[in-house]
Amino acid sequence: MTKKSNNPTGSPALAWTVPVGGARFSLQKLSPGDKPFSIGNKTEDKSRITELAQEIDALQDIFWADKRFKLLVLLQGTDTAGKDGTIRAVFKETSPLGVRTHGWKAPTELERSHDFLWRIHQQVPAAGEFMIHNRSHYEDVLVPVVEGFIDAAGTAQRYRQINDFERLLCETGTVVMKFMLHISFDEQRERLQARIDDPTKNWKFSEGDLEVRTQWKAYQKAYDDLLRATSTEWAPWTVVPADSKTHRNLMIATLVRDKLRSLQLRYPPADPELKGLHIQ
Amino acid sequence: MTKKSNNPTGSPALAWTVPVGGARFSLQKLSPGDKPFSIGNKTEDKSRITELAQEIDALQDIFWADKRFKLLVLLQGTDTAGKDGTIRAVFKETSPLGVRTHGWKAPTELERSHDFLWRIHQQVPAAGEFMIHNRSHYEDVLVPVVEGFIDAAGTAQRYRQINDFERLLCETGTVVMKFMLHISFDEQRERLQARIDDPTKNWKFSEGDLEVRTQWKAYQKAYDDLLRATSTEWAPWTVVPADSKTHRNLMIATLVRDKLRSLQLRYPPADPELKGLHIQ
Image (cartoon, rainbow over all chains, first blue to last red; front, side, top):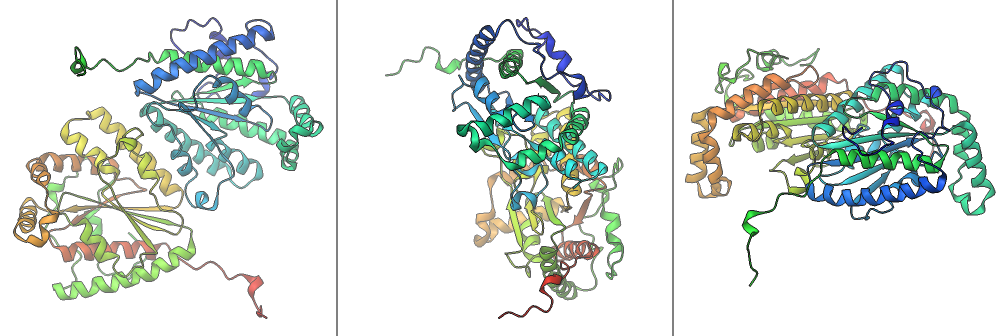
Protein backbone atom coordinates (compact mmCIF):
# COMPACT_ATOMS: atom_id res chain seq x y z
CA MET A 1 0.00 0.00 0.00
CA THR A 2 0.97 3.61 -0.41
CA LYS A 3 2.56 5.57 2.35
CA LYS A 4 0.56 8.69 1.62
CA SER A 5 -2.79 8.05 0.08
CA ASN A 6 -5.67 10.45 -0.39
CA ASN A 7 -7.90 7.46 -0.72
CA PRO A 8 -10.21 7.06 2.24
CA THR A 9 -10.79 3.42 1.37
CA GLY A 10 -7.09 2.51 1.33
CA SER A 11 -6.79 1.12 4.82
CA PRO A 12 -9.04 -1.95 4.42
CA ALA A 13 -6.44 -3.47 2.10
CA LEU A 14 -4.21 -4.40 5.00
CA ALA A 15 -6.59 -7.09 6.18
CA TRP A 16 -6.46 -8.64 2.71
CA THR A 17 -2.72 -8.53 2.23
CA VAL A 18 -1.15 -11.91 2.88
CA PRO A 19 1.48 -11.38 5.59
CA VAL A 20 5.06 -12.29 4.74
CA GLY A 21 5.77 -15.74 6.10
CA GLY A 22 2.17 -15.80 7.33
CA ALA A 23 1.95 -19.38 8.50
CA ARG A 24 -1.52 -18.86 9.95
CA PHE A 25 -2.96 -17.39 6.79
CA SER A 26 -5.91 -19.20 5.28
CA LEU A 27 -8.39 -18.29 2.58
CA GLN A 28 -11.09 -19.87 4.76
CA LYS A 29 -10.83 -16.95 7.16
CA LEU A 30 -11.62 -14.46 4.40
CA SER A 31 -15.19 -14.20 3.17
CA PRO A 32 -15.56 -13.92 -0.63
CA GLY A 33 -18.74 -11.92 -0.08
CA ASP A 34 -17.09 -9.08 1.86
CA LYS A 35 -16.93 -5.60 0.37
CA PRO A 36 -14.26 -3.75 2.31
CA PHE A 37 -13.67 -1.19 -0.44
CA SER A 38 -17.28 -0.32 -1.14
CA ILE A 39 -18.09 3.38 -0.78
CA GLY A 40 -21.89 3.15 -1.04
CA ASN A 41 -24.42 1.43 -3.20
CA LYS A 42 -23.62 -0.34 -6.47
CA THR A 43 -24.18 2.77 -8.57
CA GLU A 44 -21.81 4.80 -6.45
CA ASP A 45 -19.21 2.04 -6.53
CA LYS A 46 -19.45 1.79 -10.30
CA SER A 47 -19.04 5.47 -10.87
CA ARG A 48 -16.01 5.42 -8.58
CA ILE A 49 -14.52 2.65 -10.73
CA THR A 50 -14.84 4.88 -13.76
CA GLU A 51 -13.12 7.73 -11.98
CA LEU A 52 -10.33 5.40 -10.91
CA ALA A 53 -9.92 3.99 -14.40
CA GLN A 54 -9.61 7.53 -15.72
CA GLU A 55 -6.98 8.37 -13.15
CA ILE A 56 -5.10 5.15 -13.95
CA ASP A 57 -5.10 6.21 -17.60
CA ALA A 58 -3.68 9.62 -16.70
CA LEU A 59 -1.04 8.05 -14.45
CA GLN A 60 -0.11 5.57 -17.16
CA ASP A 61 0.80 8.45 -19.44
CA ILE A 62 3.28 9.81 -16.90
CA PHE A 63 4.46 6.28 -16.05
CA TRP A 64 5.39 5.77 -19.70
CA ALA A 65 7.22 9.08 -19.95
CA ASP A 66 8.91 8.59 -16.59
CA LYS A 67 10.46 5.23 -17.53
CA ARG A 68 11.79 4.57 -14.02
CA PHE A 69 9.32 1.78 -13.37
CA LYS A 70 7.66 -1.25 -14.90
CA LEU A 71 4.26 -2.48 -13.73
CA LEU A 72 3.32 -6.13 -13.56
CA VAL A 73 -0.23 -6.88 -12.47
CA LEU A 74 -0.79 -10.57 -11.96
CA LEU A 75 -4.27 -12.09 -11.64
CA GLN A 76 -4.93 -15.53 -10.24
CA GLY A 77 -8.18 -17.25 -9.37
CA THR A 78 -10.25 -20.32 -10.10
CA ASP A 79 -12.41 -20.60 -13.21
CA THR A 80 -15.07 -17.86 -13.32
CA ALA A 81 -13.26 -15.86 -10.63
CA GLY A 82 -13.38 -12.86 -12.95
CA LYS A 83 -9.89 -12.30 -14.30
CA ASP A 84 -11.02 -11.13 -17.75
CA GLY A 85 -13.70 -8.88 -16.30
CA THR A 86 -11.20 -7.27 -13.94
CA ILE A 87 -8.84 -6.39 -16.75
CA ARG A 88 -11.66 -4.88 -18.79
CA ALA A 89 -12.95 -2.77 -15.90
CA VAL A 90 -9.73 -1.53 -14.35
CA PHE A 91 -7.99 -0.67 -17.61
CA LYS A 92 -11.02 0.32 -19.67
CA GLU A 93 -9.84 3.92 -19.90
CA THR A 94 -6.22 3.08 -20.59
CA SER A 95 -5.06 3.16 -24.20
CA PRO A 96 -4.18 -0.25 -25.61
CA LEU A 97 -0.88 1.39 -26.53
CA GLY A 98 -0.10 1.69 -22.86
CA VAL A 99 -1.04 -1.70 -21.49
CA ARG A 100 -0.24 -5.20 -22.64
CA THR A 101 -1.86 -8.40 -21.43
CA HIS A 102 -0.72 -11.96 -21.66
CA GLY A 103 -2.91 -14.95 -20.88
CA TRP A 104 -1.06 -18.08 -19.82
CA LYS A 105 -2.22 -21.47 -21.07
CA ALA A 106 -0.78 -24.93 -20.60
CA PRO A 107 2.87 -24.78 -21.72
CA THR A 108 3.82 -25.83 -25.23
CA GLU A 109 6.37 -28.51 -25.94
CA LEU A 110 9.06 -25.85 -26.48
CA GLU A 111 8.13 -24.12 -23.22
CA ARG A 112 8.21 -27.39 -21.31
CA SER A 113 11.72 -28.01 -22.56
CA HIS A 114 12.85 -24.97 -20.53
CA ASP A 115 12.51 -24.02 -16.87
CA PHE A 116 8.98 -22.88 -15.97
CA LEU A 117 10.02 -19.23 -15.62
CA TRP A 118 11.63 -19.05 -19.06
CA ARG A 119 8.46 -18.14 -20.90
CA ILE A 120 7.36 -15.81 -18.10
CA HIS A 121 10.59 -13.80 -18.20
CA GLN A 122 10.03 -13.10 -21.89
CA GLN A 123 6.71 -11.43 -21.11
CA VAL A 124 7.68 -9.13 -18.26
CA PRO A 125 7.16 -5.40 -18.76
CA ALA A 126 9.84 -3.12 -20.15
CA ALA A 127 10.58 0.29 -18.64
CA GLY A 128 7.44 2.41 -18.71
CA GLU A 129 5.12 -0.49 -19.54
CA PHE A 130 2.00 -1.82 -17.87
CA MET A 131 1.80 -5.58 -18.25
CA ILE A 132 -1.05 -7.75 -17.04
CA HIS A 133 -0.66 -11.48 -16.61
CA ASN A 134 -3.95 -13.35 -16.83
CA ARG A 135 -2.96 -16.41 -14.83
CA SER A 136 0.79 -16.67 -14.33
CA HIS A 137 3.74 -18.76 -13.15
CA TYR A 138 1.61 -19.57 -10.11
CA GLU A 139 -0.24 -22.10 -12.27
CA ASP A 140 3.00 -24.09 -12.00
CA VAL A 141 2.46 -24.47 -8.25
CA LEU A 142 -1.26 -25.22 -8.61
CA VAL A 143 -2.08 -27.75 -11.30
CA PRO A 144 1.00 -29.99 -10.82
CA VAL A 145 0.51 -29.86 -7.04
CA VAL A 146 -3.15 -30.86 -7.15
CA GLU A 147 -2.51 -33.49 -9.82
CA GLY A 148 0.44 -34.89 -7.87
CA PHE A 149 2.98 -34.31 -10.65
CA ILE A 150 5.30 -32.59 -8.20
CA ASP A 151 6.19 -33.43 -4.60
CA ALA A 152 6.51 -31.17 -1.57
CA ALA A 153 10.24 -30.63 -2.05
CA GLY A 154 9.77 -29.76 -5.69
CA THR A 155 6.98 -27.36 -4.81
CA ALA A 156 9.07 -25.67 -2.13
CA GLN A 157 11.89 -25.31 -4.64
CA ARG A 158 9.53 -23.61 -7.08
CA TYR A 159 8.31 -21.23 -4.36
CA ARG A 160 11.92 -20.17 -3.77
CA GLN A 161 12.62 -19.88 -7.48
CA ILE A 162 9.53 -17.70 -7.88
CA ASN A 163 10.56 -15.48 -4.95
CA ASP A 164 14.08 -15.08 -6.35
CA PHE A 165 12.71 -14.30 -9.80
CA GLU A 166 10.23 -11.72 -8.52
CA ARG A 167 12.95 -10.16 -6.39
CA LEU A 168 15.08 -9.71 -9.51
CA LEU A 169 12.15 -7.99 -11.20
CA CYS A 170 11.52 -5.70 -8.25
CA GLU A 171 15.17 -4.82 -7.79
CA THR A 172 15.30 -3.79 -11.42
CA GLY A 173 12.36 -1.43 -11.29
CA THR A 174 9.28 -3.63 -11.61
CA VAL A 175 6.32 -3.03 -9.37
CA VAL A 176 4.70 -6.44 -8.95
CA MET A 177 1.05 -6.51 -7.83
CA LYS A 178 -0.39 -9.98 -7.25
CA PHE A 179 -4.14 -10.40 -6.85
CA MET A 180 -5.89 -13.61 -5.94
CA LEU A 181 -9.58 -13.33 -6.88
CA HIS A 182 -11.39 -15.12 -4.09
CA ILE A 183 -14.85 -16.48 -4.92
CA SER A 184 -17.02 -18.96 -3.04
CA PHE A 185 -17.95 -22.45 -4.12
CA ASP A 186 -21.59 -21.34 -4.40
CA GLU A 187 -20.76 -18.32 -6.51
CA GLN A 188 -18.76 -20.49 -8.89
CA ARG A 189 -21.74 -22.83 -9.30
CA GLU A 190 -23.96 -19.93 -10.29
CA ARG A 191 -21.45 -18.57 -12.76
CA LEU A 192 -20.86 -21.97 -14.36
CA GLN A 193 -24.62 -22.53 -14.53
CA ALA A 194 -25.02 -19.19 -16.27
CA ARG A 195 -22.53 -20.31 -18.90
CA ILE A 196 -24.71 -23.34 -19.57
CA ASP A 197 -28.08 -21.60 -19.43
CA ASP A 198 -27.11 -18.60 -21.55
CA PRO A 199 -26.34 -19.72 -25.13
CA THR A 200 -24.20 -16.60 -25.69
CA LYS A 201 -21.97 -17.78 -22.83
CA ASN A 202 -21.72 -21.41 -23.91
CA TRP A 203 -18.36 -20.78 -25.56
CA LYS A 204 -16.88 -19.98 -22.17
CA PHE A 205 -17.87 -23.35 -20.74
CA SER A 206 -15.55 -26.32 -20.80
CA GLU A 207 -16.06 -29.83 -19.44
CA GLY A 208 -12.69 -29.50 -17.78
CA ASP A 209 -14.02 -26.77 -15.51
CA LEU A 210 -16.35 -29.29 -13.87
CA GLU A 211 -13.52 -31.66 -13.14
CA VAL A 212 -11.46 -28.88 -11.61
CA ARG A 213 -14.52 -27.96 -9.54
CA THR A 214 -14.56 -31.43 -8.01
CA GLN A 215 -11.00 -30.64 -6.80
CA TRP A 216 -12.09 -27.41 -5.13
CA LYS A 217 -10.66 -28.21 -1.69
CA ALA A 218 -7.36 -29.36 -3.11
CA TYR A 219 -7.04 -26.12 -5.07
CA GLN A 220 -7.95 -24.00 -2.05
CA LYS A 221 -5.22 -25.77 -0.11
CA ALA A 222 -2.70 -25.28 -2.91
CA TYR A 223 -3.63 -21.60 -2.94
CA ASP A 224 -3.21 -21.34 0.83
CA ASP A 225 0.23 -22.88 0.58
CA LEU A 226 1.45 -20.72 -2.27
CA LEU A 227 0.02 -17.52 -0.78
CA ARG A 228 1.88 -18.21 2.46
CA ALA A 229 5.12 -19.10 0.72
CA THR A 230 5.28 -16.38 -1.91
CA SER A 231 3.92 -13.27 -0.26
CA THR A 232 7.16 -11.33 0.09
CA GLU A 233 8.18 -7.84 1.06
CA TRP A 234 8.97 -7.14 -2.57
CA ALA A 235 5.88 -8.78 -4.06
CA PRO A 236 3.07 -9.30 -1.54
CA TRP A 237 -0.18 -11.05 -2.38
CA THR A 238 -3.54 -9.38 -2.00
CA VAL A 239 -6.65 -11.51 -1.71
CA VAL A 240 -9.65 -9.86 -3.35
CA PRO A 241 -13.13 -10.87 -2.18
CA ALA A 242 -14.71 -11.37 -5.58
CA ASP A 243 -18.25 -12.68 -5.25
CA SER A 244 -19.32 -9.14 -6.12
CA LYS A 245 -17.89 -8.19 -9.50
CA THR A 246 -18.33 -4.51 -8.80
CA HIS A 247 -16.51 -4.72 -5.52
CA ARG A 248 -13.73 -6.79 -7.05
CA ASN A 249 -13.16 -4.17 -9.75
CA LEU A 250 -13.38 -1.32 -7.27
CA MET A 251 -10.86 -2.87 -4.94
CA ILE A 252 -8.29 -3.63 -7.60
CA ALA A 253 -8.73 -0.28 -9.34
CA THR A 254 -8.25 1.46 -6.01
CA LEU A 255 -5.12 -0.47 -5.16
CA VAL A 256 -3.58 0.00 -8.60
CA ARG A 257 -4.35 3.71 -8.53
CA ASP A 258 -2.91 4.02 -4.99
CA LYS A 259 0.23 2.18 -5.95
CA LEU A 260 0.75 4.37 -9.01
CA ARG A 261 0.23 7.50 -6.94
CA SER A 262 2.76 6.32 -4.38
CA LEU A 263 5.49 6.15 -7.01
CA GLN A 264 5.59 9.93 -7.29
CA LEU A 265 5.69 9.69 -11.04
CA ARG A 266 6.95 12.67 -12.99
CA TYR A 267 7.68 13.64 -16.55
CA PRO A 268 11.42 13.64 -17.27
CA PRO A 269 13.05 17.00 -16.52
CA ALA A 270 12.96 19.59 -19.29
CA ASP A 271 15.92 19.58 -21.65
CA PRO A 272 17.86 22.84 -21.05
CA GLU A 273 19.20 22.72 -24.60
CA LEU A 274 15.69 23.15 -25.91
CA LYS A 275 15.04 26.29 -23.88
CA GLY A 276 14.56 29.35 -26.08
CA LEU A 277 15.06 27.28 -29.21
CA HIS A 278 13.22 28.77 -32.19
CA ILE A 279 12.48 26.47 -35.05
CA GLN A 280 13.37 28.26 -38.29
CA MET B 1 34.73 -32.86 -12.28
CA THR B 2 33.47 -36.31 -12.97
CA LYS B 3 33.26 -38.95 -10.30
CA LYS B 4 34.60 -41.66 -12.55
CA SER B 5 36.84 -40.42 -15.27
CA ASN B 6 39.14 -42.41 -17.51
CA ASN B 7 40.98 -39.21 -18.17
CA PRO B 8 44.43 -39.24 -16.59
CA THR B 9 44.61 -35.47 -16.89
CA GLY B 10 41.39 -34.83 -15.01
CA SER B 11 42.80 -34.09 -11.59
CA PRO B 12 44.68 -30.87 -12.44
CA ALA B 13 41.38 -29.08 -12.91
CA LEU B 14 40.87 -28.81 -9.17
CA ALA B 15 43.62 -26.24 -8.83
CA TRP B 16 41.92 -24.10 -11.46
CA THR B 17 38.41 -24.31 -10.07
CA VAL B 18 37.50 -21.18 -8.15
CA PRO B 19 36.51 -22.33 -4.63
CA VAL B 20 32.99 -21.46 -3.47
CA GLY B 21 33.20 -18.34 -1.34
CA GLY B 22 36.94 -18.32 -2.01
CA ALA B 23 37.87 -15.02 -0.46
CA ARG B 24 41.57 -15.61 -1.01
CA PHE B 25 41.22 -16.40 -4.65
CA SER B 26 43.17 -14.19 -7.06
CA LEU B 27 43.98 -14.50 -10.75
CA GLN B 28 47.45 -13.21 -9.91
CA LYS B 29 48.26 -16.51 -8.23
CA LEU B 30 47.50 -18.43 -11.44
CA SER B 31 49.99 -18.29 -14.28
CA PRO B 32 48.46 -17.86 -17.76
CA GLY B 33 51.42 -19.76 -19.20
CA ASP B 34 50.79 -22.98 -17.26
CA LYS B 35 49.80 -26.14 -19.10
CA PRO B 36 48.30 -28.44 -16.46
CA PHE B 37 46.35 -30.49 -19.01
CA SER B 38 49.12 -31.03 -21.52
CA ILE B 39 49.84 -34.69 -22.27
CA GLY B 40 53.03 -34.22 -24.26
CA ASN B 41 54.28 -32.02 -27.07
CA LYS B 42 52.09 -29.73 -29.12
CA THR B 43 51.40 -32.36 -31.79
CA GLU B 44 50.26 -34.86 -29.21
CA ASP B 45 48.09 -32.29 -27.50
CA LYS B 46 46.48 -31.34 -30.80
CA SER B 47 45.68 -34.88 -31.76
CA ARG B 48 44.13 -35.39 -28.32
CA ILE B 49 41.90 -32.35 -28.91
CA THR B 50 40.62 -33.98 -32.09
CA GLU B 51 39.84 -37.19 -30.23
CA LEU B 52 38.04 -35.25 -27.54
CA ALA B 53 36.05 -33.25 -30.08
CA GLN B 54 34.96 -36.50 -31.70
CA GLU B 55 33.88 -37.92 -28.37
CA ILE B 56 31.99 -34.71 -27.57
CA ASP B 57 30.17 -35.09 -30.88
CA ALA B 58 29.22 -38.67 -30.04
CA LEU B 59 28.07 -37.67 -26.55
CA GLN B 60 26.05 -34.77 -27.97
CA ASP B 61 24.03 -37.26 -30.01
CA ILE B 62 23.02 -39.16 -26.87
CA PHE B 63 22.56 -35.91 -24.93
CA TRP B 64 20.00 -34.79 -27.51
CA ALA B 65 18.12 -38.09 -27.43
CA ASP B 66 18.32 -38.31 -23.66
CA LYS B 67 16.66 -34.92 -23.08
CA ARG B 68 17.22 -34.98 -19.32
CA PHE B 69 19.82 -32.22 -19.45
CA LYS B 70 20.66 -28.88 -21.00
CA LEU B 71 24.26 -27.72 -21.43
CA LEU B 72 25.33 -24.12 -21.09
CA VAL B 73 29.00 -23.41 -21.74
CA LEU B 74 29.91 -19.84 -20.91
CA LEU B 75 33.16 -18.24 -22.04
CA GLN B 76 34.59 -15.09 -20.55
CA GLY B 77 37.93 -13.38 -21.06
CA THR B 78 39.53 -10.12 -22.13
CA ASP B 79 39.91 -9.19 -25.80
CA THR B 80 42.06 -11.73 -27.68
CA ALA B 81 41.68 -14.26 -24.85
CA GLY B 82 40.53 -16.79 -27.43
CA LYS B 83 36.80 -17.27 -27.00
CA ASP B 84 36.07 -17.73 -30.72
CA GLY B 85 39.01 -20.07 -31.17
CA THR B 86 37.90 -22.21 -28.25
CA ILE B 87 34.42 -22.70 -29.68
CA ARG B 88 35.83 -23.66 -33.07
CA ALA B 89 38.26 -26.18 -31.59
CA VAL B 90 36.15 -27.84 -28.94
CA PHE B 91 33.01 -28.19 -31.03
CA LYS B 92 34.61 -28.64 -34.44
CA GLU B 93 33.29 -32.19 -34.72
CA THR B 94 29.83 -31.41 -33.40
CA SER B 95 27.06 -30.91 -35.94
CA PRO B 96 25.79 -27.33 -36.10
CA LEU B 97 22.39 -28.95 -35.58
CA GLY B 98 23.45 -29.96 -32.10
CA VAL B 99 25.09 -26.82 -30.77
CA ARG B 100 23.98 -23.22 -30.74
CA THR B 101 26.14 -20.22 -29.91
CA HIS B 102 25.19 -16.72 -28.91
CA GLY B 103 27.62 -13.82 -28.75
CA TRP B 104 26.66 -11.03 -26.39
CA LYS B 105 27.23 -7.42 -27.41
CA ALA B 106 26.36 -4.18 -25.67
CA PRO B 107 22.63 -4.30 -24.89
CA THR B 108 20.15 -2.70 -27.25
CA GLU B 109 17.69 -0.06 -26.13
CA LEU B 110 14.97 -2.70 -25.76
CA GLU B 111 17.28 -4.94 -23.74
CA ARG B 112 18.30 -2.08 -21.47
CA SER B 113 14.66 -1.42 -20.73
CA HIS B 114 14.51 -4.82 -18.99
CA ASP B 115 16.53 -6.39 -16.22
CA PHE B 116 20.00 -7.51 -17.34
CA LEU B 117 19.08 -11.21 -17.20
CA TRP B 118 16.00 -10.84 -19.41
CA ARG B 119 17.85 -11.24 -22.69
CA ILE B 120 20.05 -13.99 -21.24
CA HIS B 121 17.09 -16.10 -20.12
CA GLN B 122 15.76 -16.09 -23.67
CA GLN B 123 18.95 -17.72 -24.92
CA VAL B 124 19.37 -20.53 -22.43
CA PRO B 125 19.43 -24.08 -23.80
CA ALA B 126 16.29 -26.22 -24.10
CA ALA B 127 16.23 -29.87 -23.06
CA GLY B 128 18.84 -31.78 -25.05
CA GLU B 129 20.60 -28.66 -26.36
CA PHE B 130 24.20 -27.52 -26.20
CA MET B 131 24.36 -23.74 -25.93
CA ILE B 132 27.54 -21.69 -25.88
CA HIS B 133 27.58 -18.12 -24.65
CA ASN B 134 30.43 -16.08 -26.09
CA ARG B 135 30.66 -13.49 -23.35
CA SER B 136 27.66 -13.50 -21.04
CA HIS B 137 25.74 -11.83 -18.23
CA TYR B 138 29.12 -11.45 -16.52
CA GLU B 139 29.81 -8.49 -18.80
CA ASP B 140 27.20 -6.74 -16.63
CA VAL B 141 29.52 -7.02 -13.63
CA LEU B 142 32.61 -6.04 -15.59
CA VAL B 143 32.15 -3.01 -17.85
CA PRO B 144 29.80 -1.06 -15.54
CA VAL B 145 32.05 -1.84 -12.56
CA VAL B 146 35.23 -0.65 -14.25
CA GLU B 147 33.50 2.38 -15.74
CA GLY B 148 31.95 3.26 -12.38
CA PHE B 149 28.36 3.06 -13.65
CA ILE B 150 27.43 0.81 -10.72
CA ASP B 151 28.45 0.95 -7.07
CA ALA B 152 29.55 -1.84 -4.73
CA ALA B 153 26.03 -2.48 -3.42
CA GLY B 154 24.63 -2.65 -6.93
CA THR B 155 27.37 -5.03 -7.97
CA ALA B 156 26.79 -7.28 -4.96
CA GLN B 157 23.09 -7.31 -5.81
CA ARG B 158 23.87 -8.44 -9.35
CA TYR B 159 26.14 -11.21 -8.04
CA ARG B 160 23.24 -12.52 -6.00
CA GLN B 161 20.81 -12.17 -8.87
CA ILE B 162 23.21 -14.10 -11.09
CA ASN B 163 23.62 -16.84 -8.50
CA ASP B 164 19.86 -17.15 -8.06
CA PHE B 165 19.34 -17.24 -11.82
CA GLU B 166 21.99 -19.89 -12.40
CA ARG B 167 20.58 -21.93 -9.55
CA LEU B 168 17.19 -21.92 -11.26
CA LEU B 169 18.85 -23.15 -14.43
CA CYS B 170 20.74 -25.89 -12.63
CA GLU B 171 17.73 -27.02 -10.64
CA THR B 172 15.80 -27.39 -13.86
CA GLY B 173 18.33 -29.59 -15.61
CA THR B 174 20.96 -27.21 -16.96
CA VAL B 175 24.62 -28.08 -16.60
CA VAL B 176 26.39 -24.73 -16.40
CA MET B 177 30.13 -24.67 -17.20
CA LYS B 178 31.83 -21.31 -16.78
CA PHE B 179 35.31 -20.77 -18.18
CA MET B 180 37.44 -17.69 -17.68
CA LEU B 181 40.18 -17.61 -20.31
CA HIS B 182 43.20 -16.26 -18.48
CA ILE B 183 45.89 -14.60 -20.62
CA SER B 184 48.80 -12.39 -19.62
CA PHE B 185 49.25 -8.72 -20.36
CA ASP B 186 52.25 -9.58 -22.58
CA GLU B 187 50.35 -12.21 -24.51
CA GLN B 188 47.57 -9.76 -25.20
CA ARG B 189 50.07 -7.24 -26.56
CA GLU B 190 51.39 -9.79 -29.02
CA ARG B 191 47.93 -10.82 -30.16
CA LEU B 192 46.80 -7.22 -30.62
CA GLN B 193 50.03 -6.46 -32.48
CA ALA B 194 49.38 -9.40 -34.78
CA ARG B 195 45.99 -7.95 -35.61
CA ILE B 196 47.69 -4.76 -36.68
CA ASP B 197 50.61 -6.32 -38.52
CA ASP B 198 48.61 -8.93 -40.40
CA PRO B 199 46.27 -7.22 -42.90
CA THR B 200 44.00 -10.29 -42.91
CA LYS B 201 43.47 -9.76 -39.17
CA ASN B 202 42.90 -6.00 -39.31
CA TRP B 203 39.13 -6.51 -39.22
CA LYS B 204 39.45 -7.96 -35.75
CA PHE B 205 41.15 -4.87 -34.41
CA SER B 206 39.24 -2.04 -32.79
CA GLU B 207 40.51 1.16 -31.24
CA GLY B 208 38.33 0.40 -28.25
CA ASP B 209 40.48 -2.64 -27.44
CA LEU B 210 43.43 -0.37 -26.71
CA GLU B 211 41.43 1.71 -24.28
CA VAL B 212 40.24 -1.39 -22.47
CA ARG B 213 43.88 -2.52 -22.35
CA THR B 214 44.82 0.61 -20.41
CA GLN B 215 42.26 -0.55 -17.81
CA TRP B 216 43.87 -3.99 -17.49
CA LYS B 217 44.33 -3.89 -13.71
CA ALA B 218 40.80 -2.66 -13.11
CA TYR B 219 39.42 -5.50 -15.21
CA GLN B 220 41.59 -8.09 -13.47
CA LYS B 221 40.24 -6.83 -10.16
CA ALA B 222 36.66 -6.93 -11.42
CA TYR B 223 37.27 -10.51 -12.56
CA ASP B 224 38.73 -11.45 -9.18
CA ASP B 225 35.68 -10.06 -7.45
CA LEU B 226 33.12 -11.74 -9.67
CA LEU B 227 34.95 -15.08 -9.68
CA ARG B 228 34.94 -15.07 -5.89
CA ALA B 229 31.29 -14.04 -5.64
CA THR B 230 29.76 -16.25 -8.31
CA SER B 231 31.61 -19.54 -8.11
CA THR B 232 28.86 -21.66 -6.60
CA GLU B 233 28.28 -25.31 -5.91
CA TRP B 234 25.80 -25.39 -8.75
CA ALA B 235 27.85 -23.37 -11.23
CA PRO B 236 31.54 -23.16 -10.34
CA TRP B 237 34.06 -21.14 -12.31
CA THR B 238 37.09 -22.68 -13.93
CA VAL B 239 40.05 -20.47 -14.79
CA VAL B 240 41.80 -21.65 -17.96
CA PRO B 241 45.45 -20.69 -18.46
CA ALA B 242 45.21 -19.50 -22.04
CA ASP B 243 48.52 -18.10 -23.24
CA SER B 244 48.87 -21.37 -25.14
CA LYS B 245 45.95 -21.77 -27.51
CA THR B 246 46.50 -25.48 -27.81
CA HIS B 247 46.51 -25.97 -24.09
CA ARG B 248 43.44 -23.80 -23.67
CA ASN B 249 41.50 -25.91 -26.18
CA LEU B 250 42.78 -29.14 -24.69
CA MET B 251 41.77 -28.16 -21.18
CA ILE B 252 38.26 -27.07 -22.08
CA ALA B 253 37.64 -30.02 -24.39
CA THR B 254 38.78 -32.35 -21.62
CA LEU B 255 36.52 -30.76 -19.02
CA VAL B 256 33.49 -30.68 -21.31
CA ARG B 257 34.03 -34.30 -22.28
CA ASP B 258 34.49 -35.32 -18.64
CA LYS B 259 31.36 -33.50 -17.60
CA LEU B 260 29.31 -35.13 -20.36
CA ARG B 261 30.64 -38.55 -19.41
CA SER B 262 29.73 -37.98 -15.78
CA LEU B 263 26.07 -37.47 -16.67
CA GLN B 264 25.66 -41.13 -17.56
CA LEU B 265 23.77 -40.23 -20.68
CA ARG B 266 21.59 -42.85 -22.28
CA TYR B 267 19.19 -43.20 -25.15
CA PRO B 268 15.58 -43.29 -23.96
CA PRO B 269 14.37 -46.81 -23.15
CA ALA B 270 13.04 -48.84 -26.05
CA ASP B 271 9.30 -48.58 -26.67
CA PRO B 272 7.76 -52.00 -25.86
CA GLU B 273 4.88 -51.31 -28.22
CA LEU B 274 7.31 -51.29 -31.12
CA LYS B 275 8.71 -54.72 -30.29
CA GLY B 276 7.96 -57.24 -32.98
CA LEU B 277 6.07 -54.68 -35.04
CA HIS B 278 6.15 -55.47 -38.74
CA ILE B 279 5.53 -52.63 -41.11
CA GLN B 280 3.06 -53.83 -43.76
